[in-house]
Picture 1: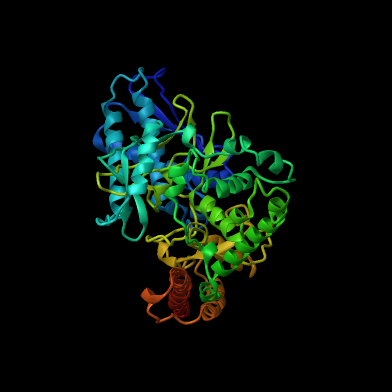
Picture 2 (picture 1 turned 90 degrees about the vertical axis):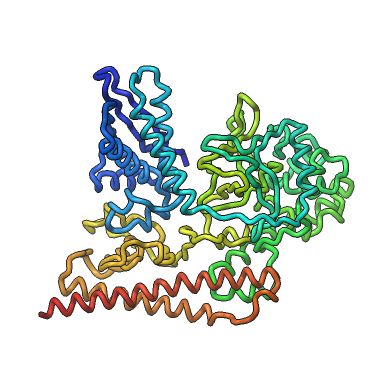
Length: 555
């Protein structure tokens, strides 16, 4: 997906006292039509601008920043934020999620910085005031949603320190150190106070593990003849052998990798059984079946035909699964200077842990001037604080399966997809609004700010699907429409009560004595129960609201 580009248009040709800020919504955005409609619904011209009078008073400056943020929040919405946004679209111009807020604030910050650097602007004091206010909002966001770090003092990071020294001797620059932190294993800690824009880590391309390394090996002429094999699979096979190579240039990197990676792909039978009734059960089973099929397509053929290149003892199923877990949990997509996107392993960067409100959000592109991958800060990180990265907008089921952990913070991407037949009614007057979703989902209703009639903390497209099945959609408090609402909520409550029953009762066993995988499975199942329970509770509360309104209709 193309990133929405923010740009500034200074109207200095017309007046020396006014600047027009323009945030452009890319027409290549897959959600372009929905976002364009949203902007229009809240009274924002998609092609319009926000004017700043250079000689403005504080109230006007606050108004300008507020108007830019309203536009930027909608432009930076992702699909899930848009889906759960609410029937009252004005909700979407306010705070949505830490991710969306940080992206919106940085869209504004880029505009301001571009204007300040414009030599034609004479009085930059007003611009600087808006910039200061934006930076303060970013800092406040971090304080509100950031995660505390407790460093384990008696732990040794000797191997990790050797890796850092190796990196520095080969051109790596960093303002981070590696330490063990409670509840997260190893993490990257800021050695000094870092501000927005500071480069926390810079890794030269020469230290990046990418497909180019495979091209130089004796296995490449063999692998390139296999129809349909990807460069990622080649790299995976290369790493299975390279980690045992004592002469490898990346020997110190492989030494820091754990012998067991403990992702959902390594779940044992007891953990799989504990997932019964959850969406994660099918996800893990399908992923492991896919990997097993992939392995059996390659072996034993490769090590029987080319035992010198693919030694059988290095290419067992267990070794293959370990390598899969390594690449799933540690790899990054990097755009190289030649314009090609490659899957890579980046030494030291793998110590950056994930957060719902990370410090580093924009990375993954080689700087052609320095021929390096840089990790700049999107929000401040104080000395001694853990510096977080974003792995992506993933559900907890995905993070558990491929990374081996559950987020400590509430995750807005924890959705339960629903198998619902979608029948779009093109004649429905509401069809052109927000009904053109090809799938539906639910999440914990604790994320919703609208629990009133016609909302109930649930996604509007989800509710409208059931309304549309019963006739034209109406959001007026007539007896007929209220009775339809009661019918919908009763049906939904029954559906989710069945789902809750399939999840079973909460296990009361001592989890501290359980194996790591069973504990994670039980924790995930608890999360699923909380989501389903919140929906049942919201349906109950909605029915009570509707019963009260119906009683008023009878008066």
